[in-house]
Length: 262
Ligand code: SF4
Ligand code: SF4
Ligand code: SF4
Image (cartoon, rainbow, N blue to C red; front, side):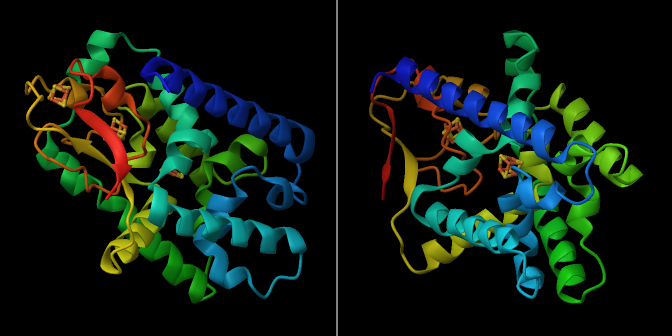
């Protein structure tokens, strides 16, 4: 498939997924305290994170959401985080907000890799704290912070959820995929599964850089929404790659960056 067409297809899938999510929010859960979890388009993420504690709950929808949440984790071991690059409505929303900025702003305002590497550890802490609270039966922290639940029932959600939502939407105007890169606990869980896959030598789709034809222009780096240092490696091992394909699309040397299994 041609690189431009590939991006169009990806955007189309993202838009359809976002429209479906908004439709579900409006039709089923808007302002509702009961239907919210059963119909939430983000349930696979939420119950994927809090799954263990919900096994005792009998409603079938929770079981489906937990299973889907973990199925995505398993698939990520083979394909990487394509869910984030194609399907997740919150990822698409952040991407759309950052696209409102000029190309020059998007290119110039990039965090140094030194700080990126440190800040992206926060999401593992969020996952660990959330998991401890859930397993100990103290609190479903993620639910009180969940940005999608906040959109769906803003009048019923706690102030903490509203703060998180404002932080994500406002922050996305200044920094690409701020929640995905630094704070999303589901991203941490998906990365954990990728780590397990690597441990057991499961071949995973990765971006490969052909050194012979690379001209070290760093255009790939300047366009990566996850701020990954592609131009300095031969294979992008970073589990935060969401397989958006923007680096391969923007690279001026055809065939230098390819996405394949290793
Ligand atoms: S990192 Fe989290 S919020 Fe971002 S696209 Fe992935 S699951 Fe969605
Ligand atoms: S955009 Fe292509 S040519 Fe430029 S540094 Fe990246 S891989 Fe090399
Ligand atoms: S490395 Fe390439 S495919 Fe992966 S997130 Fe960055 S731009 Fe997208």
